[in-house]
Length: 268
Image 1 (cartoon, rainbow, N blue to C red):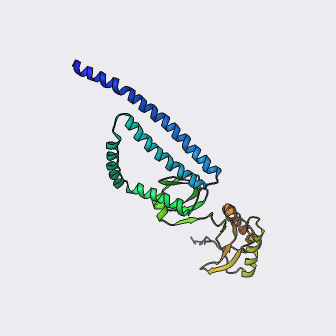
Image 2: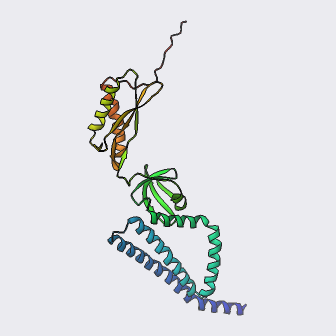
Image 3: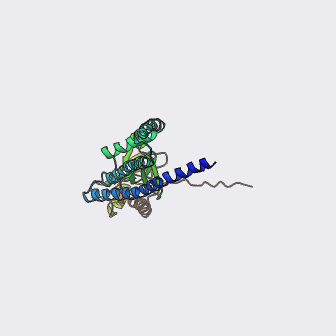
């Protein structure tokens, strides 16, 4: 028992300084890595590098430095780096096979940074979600949804799927379908609808707003109403036009068809 206690004391005396040194190296190393990453981002920002690339390179640099720090700390504890590297390589192969999805997401992130289908601040629609790009990370892309939700999409599926970018062109067309009664005069209706569009301050003059007969439906004549606006004004133009069109049609005596309740008088 005394021999075991003596050996335990020797182990404590021998390894305690190494463990304390390793912990100190880990803490100091993480602080230095944070400083390096922040400094790198500042340099990239001063050189007007795209913000998406700034975030991506910052994340990539941070992970790479943390891996190097981890290996250094392990070596400080007395583990041979050569044997550890072999173990790490074997473990990396096994983990790589198990985490094929994560590797696909990393590759997807690289493809996004190379081809740049979108950047931070763009309004996009992808994987059934719509939102403003908040951050492009190594494995995922974060969006801020229209209702202020955070949406996280894996880069692998994002890079392999359809992406609609509403921001790149700068302008958008608002697609409205307005139905009026068959009794309404077509020319007068077109004039009323056109006046609503041209009088709105956020509707662009070029391209010219369009008002055309879309279809002769079962109970209404449907007009395709197509104003253009800046991307940032899309929803303001959409809601304003819907409200203004209703008021203008009512003022002109043009009926918008709707189901009427038919009352049947029953004789007692």
